[in-house]
Image (cartoon, rainbow, N blue to C red; front, side):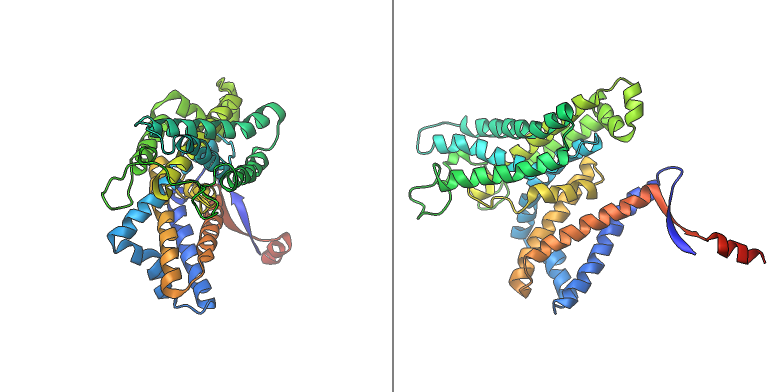
Length: 363
């Protein structure tokens, strides 16, 4: 007798619905074991991660601030994944967008530039992110190169380029030799929504992106094409849908949103360009996209949940001296369980008996 995976006759809608909840539950159980191994009280650790950040206004604002780039990037990635195009390099597109938008802020530093600065920064960042994402997309379409590898390798190029700029030509001469630009002028920063708080206009932009994606996927022909090309490539070919065009389109949109998220992060919470502006938003957004079932509303909820783990991880580090890297472990385990549980949408476990066991049963 052995346990085997058997392909279902049709996908399970029930499993698709509860799969994220099962994955979260399994992740929590795994983390309880990990906390115990680290010698920490699991209940106190879980409280620090998931309850404490929800008990004060500042932490709630921080959750929304952290969720903003995650949601924007994940929305773009979801379009790629729905079209069966695998953009893994959103982190690089995020960084390139931050660099491109910051160029305007650096060049207008200390001048009498007006209110046009921030809109131009946003547009330039989105354009740069889109163009950067088109590199792996075009390599995929024209040369058959793996978009997974090319988009991932470009992350390191973007990271090193940013590092060069802030350590070289863009370094703040009054910054005590730290690798950072000067603080952006007020006209080059994202406005705050709450005076004295951290919540900024980028959060509203993220909500608009969610709404736009929902309309695109649910009410437009192009959204229908994206879903069909990913779910039924053969049917899409018979329907005359151009898969290569959709790869280009979804990569461009994904890169634009990642680039936009990059400059919003730099011109918002950070206030200047520096190394390490991202704690891995581009990679964490992959988890957000799948945890949210590649659905705009689901991604919004998943983005808030993953943002909670960032803030909770920081509080657990302060209160219980739990290493901050445990947060990354949590996110990695969550992705593993999400993908594992998703396999049960198309497959199911079944007990299989060998021929010898069947023969014995007949005697």
